[in-house]
Structure formats: C-alpha cells, structure tokens
Length: 112
Image (cartoon, rainbow, N blue to C red; front, side, top):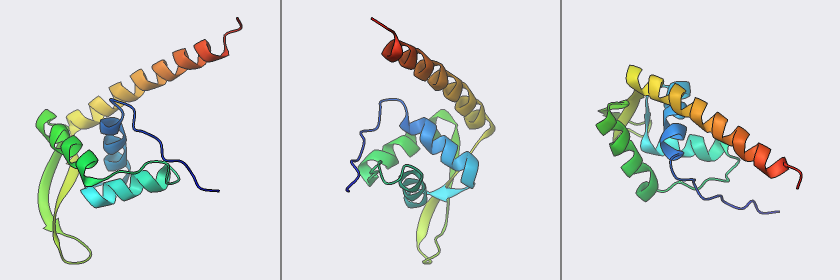
C-alpha cells in the first residue's frame, strides 16, 4: 500500500529543520531533507524549492549558521548548524506546537 505524502503545515518546516539540526548536528540541505523524509516514514516530500528558502530564513533569523564544506561525495555544500538562539526558538515553538495540538485534539474529541 502506497503512503500518501502530507502537505507541510504553515509554520512547521522551520521547527522540523531546527529539530533535525539539534538532533543530528551540522547537515547540508539534502541531508536535512533526507532525515525529515526518513523520520516521517516518507510521508513528507521535501524538494529544493521547499527547503532552501527555509534554510535562508533560519539563517537570517540567526537561528542557524551556514558554512561551506565537502560532502561524503567530495562535493561543495553549505552545512547548517543550529545556534543558541535557534535552540531557544526551537524550545519555544515546540511548546506552542504541543499546546496547539492539545487544543485541536480537545476540539476533535469534544462530544456534541
């Protein structure tokens, strides 16, 4: 049975990228996308047009820092690392997300 890919909810991609970097350490865009697809059981499909703007945005906020390095295939790639302010933002966004999920769950299970 083929799994359906899920749309990425607005405002969640940054949090997912920050979590991947916090968990895995420095990664290039392809490594981040692969990790998110793997953890989601291939229910997320991230392409360059999705992930690169998010990485630029995160770096502009100061939540990540990018530097050039070599991949396993000896290719030049930009590696991203989460910063201290990125860890703080991740903690805050994770708390907000869990609160929202709790509210939605209550609303969906409320007896009518």
